Amino acid sequence: FACPVCLETLKEPATLPCGHSYCLVCIQSHWDKKDNNGQYSCPQCRQVFQPRPSLAKSTVLVEAMEK
Image 1 (cartoon, rainbow, N blue to C red):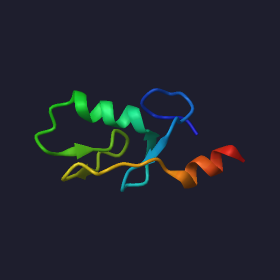
Image 2: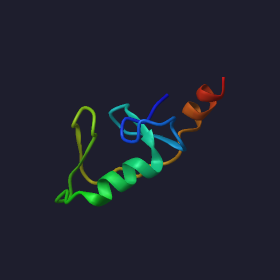
Image 3: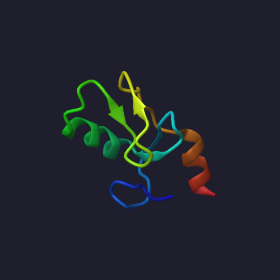
């Protein structure tokens, strides 16, 4: 389970509405750095989300990673 942004093992994984997962900090900083004009997209599939999705730690993914 690697983050596509930092390429490390997911830390506090968050899953976007499109199903792709990132470290919570990585996706938040990715969106914070870009001038998105109110549109936020998945770095992998480019699906656009408007407004910015509220993200939380994916406990299901955390449990799967621990197995």
